[in-house]
Picture 1 (cartoon, helix red, strand yellow):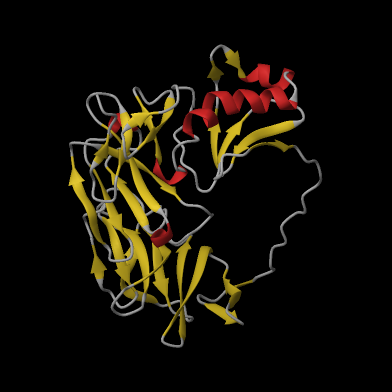
Picture 2: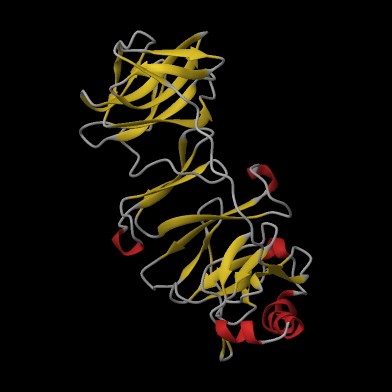
Amino acid sequence: MKRVLLAVMFGIGILSFAQDSEEKTKEIIKEQIVDKIKNYKPIDLAPYSKDGKKWALMDVKSRKILTDFILDEPSTFNPDIFISIDSEKFYGIKISWDYIVSLMPRYSGDEGMPVSMWIERTNEPGFKIKNGSVVSHYLKYKYINPILYKGEYYAIISSEEKEGRMLINPKGEEQEGFHFKYFTKTYYKDKESGETIFYVEDFEGKKGFITISGKRKLYGELMNDANTSLEYSIQKDGKNIDEIKKSGVVDLVTHKWLIKPQKKYKIYDIKYVAPEKTTDRAASIIYFLATDQSGQHFVLDINGKPTLPKE
């Protein structure tokens, strides 16, 4: 459930929700949101904002703004919208795919501490694997992530003895062409070879993808790391929205640009609509949050076309 903070509803603040009865709180949500969207399908609703501060829900087909600008964050039904509230008894309100409003009670209880596996540190470079896990490695390694390739194990490591990260074999021997400032495994495979894809940044600041056989993709073209949602990655040259000059979207299945870097829109986030929680983008409608020189914030569809309210 996507968290959305409902800050003010016609003068009713967050604190007021805590003071109202359960039924009164649900009725407020029903009147100000559900009653205004109930004649529209959740799959057709997308967020829109005039200034990026307060958000409304808009019907993408008619391009009609349905609610007032009362949400603190953009949201889509996937499958629920979740609204945070300040209450001792409840931590939020859920609007489900079929527009049923329910309060989410708080729970108390102790959480168990995570259990870490004991790993032997040795005086010899290299590492050992047992049942797919590292059981020992050189004591100078600060980070290690094993990789299985053609029946043999390798590992991405960082070391106190050398800057950056590198790929080594079990003897600790660095593999040629695999020493980078930053180097990490992604969850994606090369479409042609089936090899694991790595995201890397070299010492000159070039970013891109590389397979364990050395095949490079979009190398020197990426602008930031490969954080993803439903196998898409937003690429932008600024961390904050006001710093973005150029942005685009990479498809991590094909490792090609879905939306090539451009300056017309500042693309900064990914949203999706789906009747259930999913990691399958084929079962979802994908949107990319963007803004432009007008200051309004809106969604782009999968083809990069903006959805703006009809004037």
